[in-house]
Length: 386
Image 1: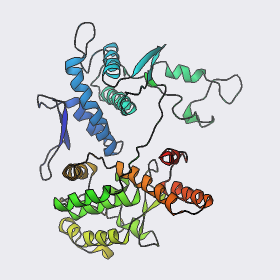
Image 2 (image 1 turned 30 degrees about the vertical axis):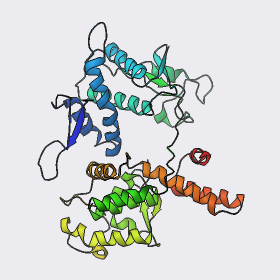
Image 3 (image 1 turned 120 degrees about the vertical axis):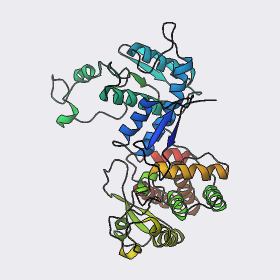
Image 4 (image 1 turned 90 degrees about the horizontal axis):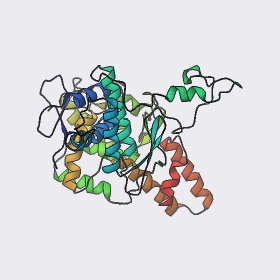
């Protein structure tokens, strides 16, 4: 089926756009293009691509199947028209149930609902937030609960008889996650469930496909990092030479974590074979494109480990393009983040197979939770059911 799609600017081509979104007629769709370029300055690029992947089908659907008062809805239509279009999309395409709740609407997930409902709602709300800020949408954000602020102020605070203070004041206990949101469409019965990937040979299928396709050593090393460390792709691409030198263990690297604001608050561990490949890459392939023509031991701490063929830091978009080619060659549909799910599943399986007592199991599980730097230790419980 035809749809909207995006294309990255090829390496070596000069353009003010790193990426352009096209409609089904292959005409540039500037609103989504501008949304991408606004967001990559603010959040991780992999998150922006996930947003685009969820918004593109919606805008195609909006163009041909939406209706409001016997007409098609435009992306820059009045707020009520946009809300109606999103409502129809949630009902008909994402198989949700919706119930009105005064100033907002409750979204109920069903057994047929897409796993991407929350992501879509975050993406579409963020899209209109950007369009309002860029003055491309002349109305208020239609995906915002306009009475949210009033509702929040009505909540009791720590001081008896006084309304709740703003979050910025720092005087109130934080509200529990997901209970309060300013979204017009609020998911009522959401439960996040990580994916369980139990194929023990999955990494080797990727490696074999990459070797057959003659991938670059850089992409082989990064793929090994993903499967061996459980790190997010953004965390791997942000690694520097100094991150390797910070650890006393030669098989460990300091790394960022989600929400750490670039601070190295955890470490990741690679195998001896991957370490050899990493050093080989830095001393050979990487030197071909680097501005500093020195080997690993002489590189400054601030140098990124992975470079593009232009000698710039390797980006998610560039890696994903190569990753998608390899996974397609391997006959699997797999985004880089699923390597993290595979890692946790494999680690937990190993804990149960190699432990002799319940105490050993609990101790190793605590070590895994600490290694992953999960904010909520209960995340492991879902994998454990498997």
